[in-house]
Image (cartoon, rainbow, N blue to C red; front, side):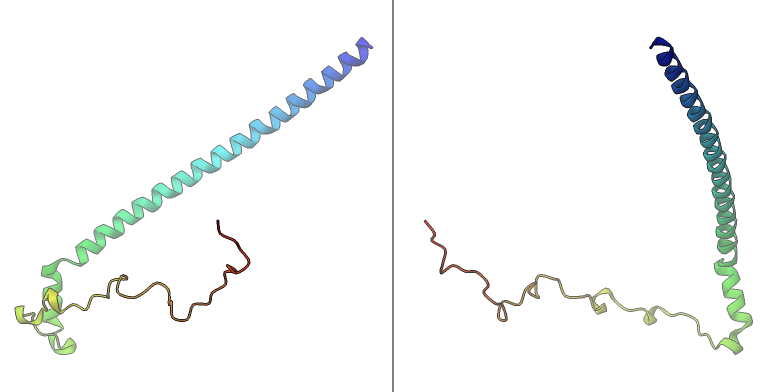
Length: 120
């Protein structure tokens, strides 16, 4: 009986060792994949920073003003004047939700059965 117990214990130890071995390599694979993704995220962030810098460089007001002057005839642009802007009180804001009812009570249907219920 002890021999069978020793064999089962040895098989359990071998099985757990094999499982731990496989889990170790699966974990290492996931870690290397995570590092690869982190590198990709870092390079994407670097590219994004470069694109933001290029966008800021291309949208300089003096450059845009010069382009507008060069292409004045083709674009038909006019210089901005202060009277072209509106006022805050001219903005059409949506009505607050409190003015419109949430439920239409006029078309409500009574579904309660209070005739059969006795209220103490």
